[in-house]
Amino acid sequence: MIIKAINLFLSHKTYLGCFILSLIIAWIITPLIAQLAKKLGIVDLPGARKIHTKKVPRMGGIVIFIALWTPILLLYFWENRISQSLEGSWWDIAIIALAGCAVMLSGLLDDMRGLNAWKKLLVQVPIAFLFSQYIARFDYISLPGFGQFSLGILSVPVTMLWIVGITNAFNLIDGIDGLATGVSFIVAITNAIISTISGNQFMAVIMFSLSGACLGFLRYNFTPARIFLGDSGSLLLGMTLATTSISTYSKSNIVASFFVAVIILGYPMTDTFIAMFRRKLYGKPIFSADLGHIHHRLLARGLDHPKASLIIYSFCMALSVLALGLVLENSLMTFIAVLLLTIMVSLGVYFLGFFRMFRVRQVRETKSKYLIAYHLTELLLAKLSLVDTLEQIYVLLEQACKEFG
Image (tube, rainbow, N blue to C red; front, side, top):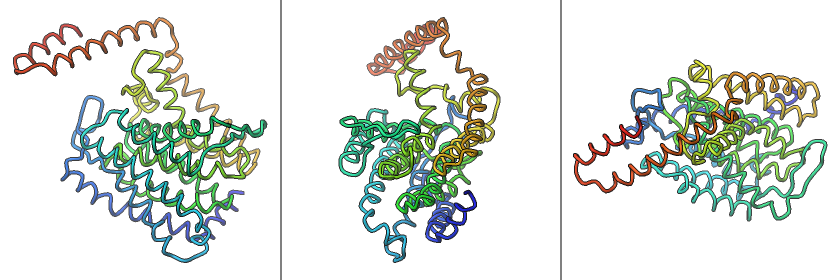
């Protein structure tokens, strides 16, 4: 089956062309965009929660956007079998590009000036609503062994939650060098292979182009990163993968298509769910930053950035093998993937200390300490906004030091 898929891929020169061209474009323009980011001052500064000791450009979203859509734009003007098969899909493709562009620009504004999560949601939620109303949505969910379930009036809310959730999930996992880019490459190339096997040209063209863009950019984004994705890049990747998967799997004849989409995006979805649950459990704002993500826990165990990223890549690849096994209806492939995932999840839960989250005493102590610190911080910020002189600032800092011990 795998050999058949590879031969099928090689027989589609257009897909191969999109992949190679986007890879080359990303490879070439990334240093140029990095220089531009430095000149514009769009850089990530060193800080307590960061390991880099110098300014790093953070305009990766521009690179991904150009590398992703240039081959597809050229394909629009190139007459061949694939472009002809996409004749009725160009409107959907344009909407996906515009949606990605909108969140990329909001992310770029965040990288430049700083935006809180709610302001970025003001861009994402209308996009999700319009997309679910006029382009595509999940009308039903299909699960292996259980058949299809109609979502009915929940169709639009579920689709909106999917788009906003996946978009922000990729933003949340972008915490160490090369992680979000590498995970996006694995997700995109898996979708590309599945699309090639199922004959879905719409998904295949976008996913091959996206995987090439990610791989080309990863050369500069992997440790030590010479450029970061920034919010512009992580939000673009999340939005593109979310909207493309809806357009494809909502109309797919693949058995358990929704389940397959969830599996492929399993890592960012799992990490985001755990993060939100943990923050809610400890009384923290859902959108607050912390050091409890899976990649942070791997670093806390003494791993460096490359090793932590490679472990997460391995987990994502196991998920991809499981998805391919289900699509190909290959029992052996599915069994091996489930076995690997069971071992990896068991080891991860034990060694990364996830059970400690549920210790009642620890939850109570940590939650009360956090709430006190949170309210003190809010009070100090309110006072800081009213000061007029440098001397008053020193007095406030002295009070803060006493309060926090």
